[in-house]
Image (cartoon, rainbow, N blue to C red; front, side, top):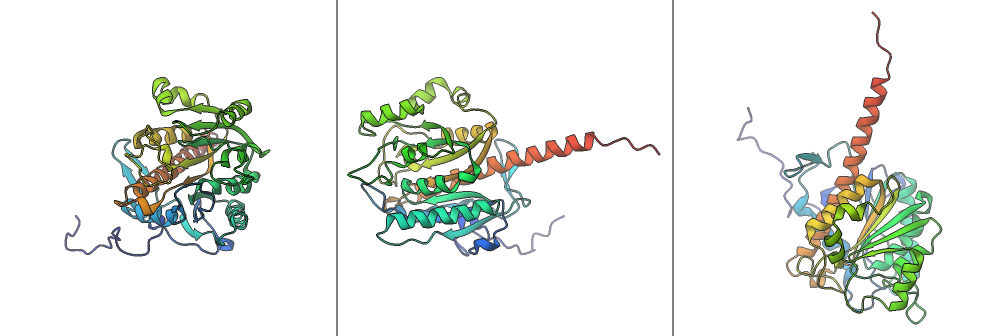
Length: 335
């Protein structure tokens, strides 16, 4: 019987150091020993309109404190599942160093940092920043390839260049398509006028990209959408917060009406995690200067924690299945 007078350490959301999910800090990547490594990339030099996503990693971390229920895991009442248990090591590695005014040096720093995370065996969870940061992250994941890219976004991001600039946030998916270790690309949530030039859409379709709007996905159903993704392969997921409807996540530089609601993205992410191996993901385009109620940062944090939960739960199930198979093959003891 518990003693109601016993004091507990609560670690409430508004106390302590604001790391992602209040997980431990590891700023020396040479000492990294974790299953999941969260890294911020506060770079918005690739944006074409409203800036502010350089503060995205801080905003997402702030939002994540609401969902930091301690290190003993979190219980999902709908699924009757425990997630993020103590057997898994999640750490916050701080931010990639930025060089103001030098987009390409920032991209180099991002690539080098993510490479080091991958080489140490951790899954990178990257908090942006604008969507241009996906380019160096994709390059850094070469040793994990080949893999498919799954994008949740309002915009196609297939521009070849803007007046010679080839590494901005409107070109990130096209740059990924040019990487040898990237296979198929699935673009979910694409919608709206002025999202892309027709020639960009044609180029994406010629590449073989699967492009679906929220309305199309609702019509055919998420289960049928997932069936289009090759089963048992590796996936990199890139989530632009404007893939969600502005009523859910308003604080982004390029909001577009008609997006997903939280439950739809949550369901997509769980289905993808069950479909194959997620090797990493990024969450980009959260712009705290426009997040007056803090809701966008919370939604981005929650979806990030959801995806980490789903990925680790599938690894947990796979480990349990392998253990059962190994145990079942043991010879019977004849006493």
